[in-house]
Image 1: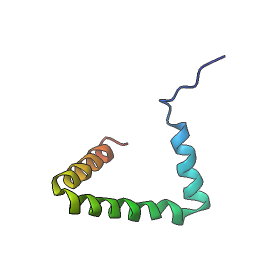
Image 2: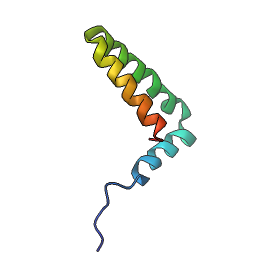
Image 3: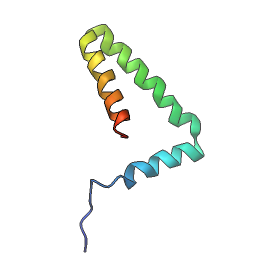
Length: 64
C-alpha cells in the first residue's frame, strides 16, 4: 500500500476547480477576504503588511 504524498498538488486543485466551476462567486470572494486581512495587518504593523504583500507577489511570480 502506498503512503499518501502530502506534497502533491491534486488536493488543492480539486477545491480550486470545484469552486471555479460550481461556485465562481465563492472563489473570487476570497480575494476580498485577503484584502481585508492585509488592511488589518497594515493598521497593526505596516511593515508586516508589506511583507505579506511581497510574499504573495513572490509566490505568484514563482507560479504558486
